[in-house]
Length: 327
Image 1 (cartoon, one colour):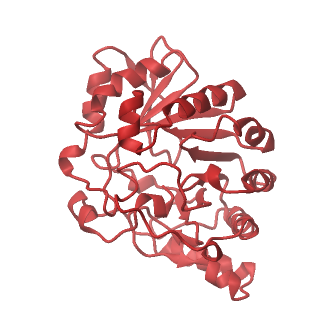
Image 2: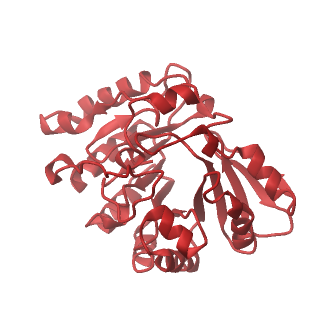
């Protein structure tokens, strides 16, 4: 029985765990230009604490776990954590979101340890533009990581592309051509406001606009949605690859949201755009029992808002930056 039901009858089965606030890229829509104050080592959850919290969550009904960051592959000992999480009874999907800079050398071991799915962040197929967005010259490493991930034949490999008007919106069709004959899904994500990322409404390219561009050359056929899916998924008729859209700004999916987030310092965020957090780290380090953690988790779930505020309020809100939250 799922014990993570909020006040709007939404069952939560999906937990995103940030294992670090460090990142080896500096994506302009994610990382503030001046950077973020990094947590001290003792402020970050230990791997043992992460495992303990995850086990409690799974006992309450979580069956999908995604490892995020920062960049999760910079966290030492990650492979051992993956093995332990993958062995938890009840976990059906163990996924990771990565920028793939370090992926080529690690993906085989991660897969063997129990990782079942990968999302790879990639906002441009053009090396120079990639460098302008990420402030790092690592495009070739990311492409090598994608190739290595495909060779491992994981259950799913997806590309996450944040589309920004005047920055990379002219590459939508290029991405579709890139995935069309591969076992790859490309997910086009509407540009979202976070602390100090210089978001402007004029930068948002809507789901409808992106779909319209693609349908000039391809036939999109809707795929069956699963409960809690945030993406609108489509097959490319006549091709192997698939296309998805995450319409956070223009067509909210709050009503079916089934996800919770654990920040790298052990705080629960029940909603990406909701400032209130509940610290599990402090409870654990004060000697709290697993029963105490369960109570705190359920308090956080019950406090989850029905929906995020309108775009204008989001842009003015005092939320954390994306890299601090963990996506």
